[in-house]
Image (cartoon, rainbow over all chains, first blue to last red):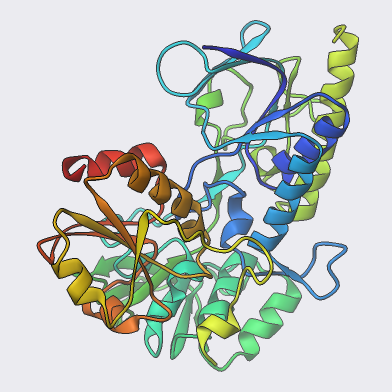
Length: 316
Length: 124
């Protein structure tokens, strides 16, 4: 059975849930496909579900954890009548209205007059041999889930941005030493995060360094580090590996349906408009520049207002 | 500082559900409860501060309800680190399947219901 909705929202991070709050308050009875459980950031609630403290979301002067913030946003969307379904769109047909959204094979699960795309971005992995095999056995996508198991051990965090530094600092609660592996001779992270990380005695920064290889049979036993300037290799006896080297947008199901940039992000028109009239996008799926919870939420609001006006203009 | 107190992620929001269809395990009761089970048992190694664990908790409740032949059990790793260490758990959620008290399978990481049911299908 295909169900028809005024507005379908794909994704339940800050962008998707803000769009849900706004469209629900506008009596559009939105349905949110919130995603499916995973130990990566590609899960209901999105990247913030793997974040510990969020200190820069306005309105929370003493900070809030990522999962708490997302639980509050979800509660707020539900309060106004948004409906959330734990599922992921597997393909879409945006070639004609109403738009078709498929969940698995067969006929479309949903049709919708307007669609708000808020599928976000997911973390990149290193792509090294053994990385998949040792996932959950020393290699982790979730510091908040797995940090506990590395008490008193030496571990490595790869990356030089805010996410990497936040993860590194969180992991110093457990690890004896956190080796921060940074490809360049400087960090990308914000000044405040840099100051904190560099002042942390448990964090050792390896500048101009990449992970060359991952070793271990049943669990991670060590890494080979490579100097990005000299090419020299050296071993590091790390039993944990956490990767925070950047993100890719979750746009594979929109290939051939929406205009995408070469890097995979959705190409945007005015406001939250995409290349297809009636399809709007918000959050990290269309933003590789700011990528903040607050900018995502703001763009979710824009998409909701744009969708509402579009529906009004087409006589809904 | 103990991680459980240092890192309580959901002080006020929803608690882990305690379904009546799910068996609660502890370090002191584990061997007896797992050893005396008649069919396969899947043990969910979890913690209060683990977001992905919370996501699969209701799915495991459903699987327990829908499959009376499979015993679904939970072990809180914060309170029961002896068993957790014995099985070398390094990532949660970890689901370990036991038959006659012996580990026969392991699923690491949160997954959608369809994927979990498929992985567990040979024990259902």
